[in-house]
Structures are given as C-alpha cells and as structure tokens.
Length: 219
Figure 1 (spheres, helix red, strand yellow):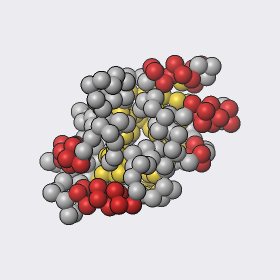
Figure 2 (cartoon, helix red, strand yellow):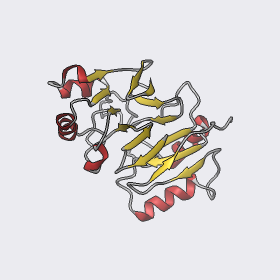
Figure 3 (cartoon, one colour):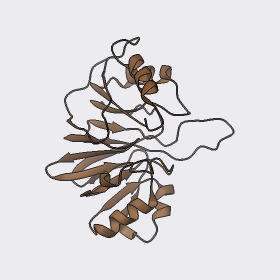
Figure 4 (tube, helix red, strand yellow):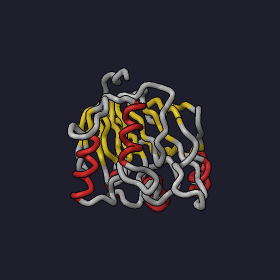
C-alpha cells in the first residue's frame, strides 16, 4: 500500500489503482478526495468530517461510498445506500480494502464535556487510524497513525500508547494545530531521543507519500 498524508488527520491509502481516504475534514486540502473510491470517517468533529466536501465528492463521483458511525451517517441524508453506518466489531470491504472497526467513543476531554461516538479503522490488517482516541485494537498493527496533539492527551499518553500497540512504524497525524516548535518537541519525545518506544516514529509533510506494510513489533 501507499500512504499519503494530508492536512491534520486525513490520509489516503492506495493499492492496485484504488484510493481509500480517511477523515477528510475541515483542515484537509480539497485534493485529498480527488479520485477517491471510498471514504472512512471516524467521528463528527469538523477537523475529521466536512459534510460539504463529502457531498461535493459524492456529486462528482457517483461511485463514491462512505463508511462511518451513526452520528455522521445521519448528517449525510440524501446519499442513501452510498453511506453505511458501522460500529465496533464490524468488518467490511471498501474499494477492495478489508476494514475492521475498533473502538466506540471519543477520548475524554473533560468530565463536563459530553463524549461523542468515535470509531477506529484497521485497514488490510496493517494500518490503524484511531480517530480521536487511543484505542488499542485487538489485532496486530504494523503501521499506526498516531494523533500527536489534542486537548485530550499528553506526550506521556502517546508514549504508553505506542508501547502498547507496538507497531513497526508510527506516523504522526492530528498535528494541524502544532507550530514548528511543537512538532519538534513532540518528535523529540517520540523519536530516538525520547524515553523509548518499540516503533519508528515519522512525520510526513502534507502531500508526501510512502510505502507501508511489514510485520509489527512483538512487545
């Protein structure tokens, strides 16, 4: 598979000429959805889900399909069977990719802020996008998309999360609110100069593409 990073929390995965896009939100470049065959959306927050962008993409591509949770699916009324609501434990095929759903809830921001639904997607038993949660899937993960900056986590949480999932590679996502200093600081803790994780840490610039795959690390 080929992995392309887009703005903030969005990535595109490609294989055999098919394109799967995850979390094209309000901080994502419009070109992320160009040529997409299928879209996965983890939850309804604006930085992960743009109703307008998805409706435009669906209008331009009658074959586009969307898989997401029930809350997001309810906001895409009018697209009919092109939108499928899924939840924890579900498995399906999207544009030739095998996808399994892990997790159910957004991470806690504060006890006074109601939690919303959030699902993570494991693609082809290799790549995991957790959305806004530090969900540990009950399956091996070779490539983890790591949300490196959010109001619901600390660097300490991230280190423990990477250690528990133990992927071969961790790629930074959810970094749209970080400046260069913050990016370097987080990378310092998660990279070779930090306290240590079993995984190689990477941060791609928007638009960069890398091959992914290979076995996870056994903790």
